[in-house]
Image 1 (cartoon, rainbow, N blue to C red):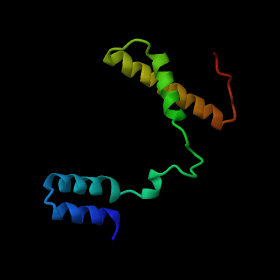
Image 2 (cartoon, rainbow, N blue to C red; image 1 turned 90 degrees about the vertical axis):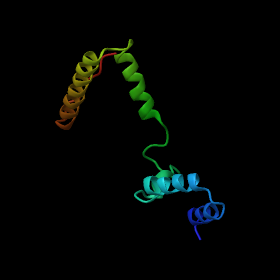
Image 3 (cartoon, one colour; image 1 turned 45 degrees about the horizontal axis):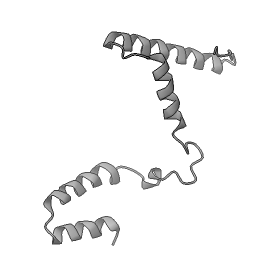
Image 4 (cartoon, rainbow, N blue to C red; image 1 turned 90 degrees about the horizontal axis):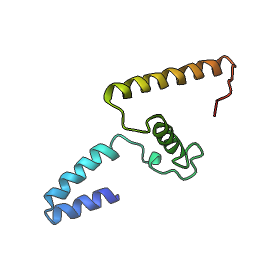
Length: 101
């Protein structure tokens, strides 16, 4: 018997209705449609740290030192998306430009 079935059986025995609802939600949301191997980063060479998310957070903080209004936010994000796409297209063509500091 796997651990999920064991917990479910014990919850039924103890008549834990709220926990059973949560357990069903957890099963349907996280266990049913996902490969559990993707939960673990052990031996994953691609992303072993959160550096990518920290880098994004840092760049957004530099881009928006003060909280922008909605329209400023959208315009600035569109501009950044365009620049990223332009950089990507240039790199595909073999044209590398130096970033300004």
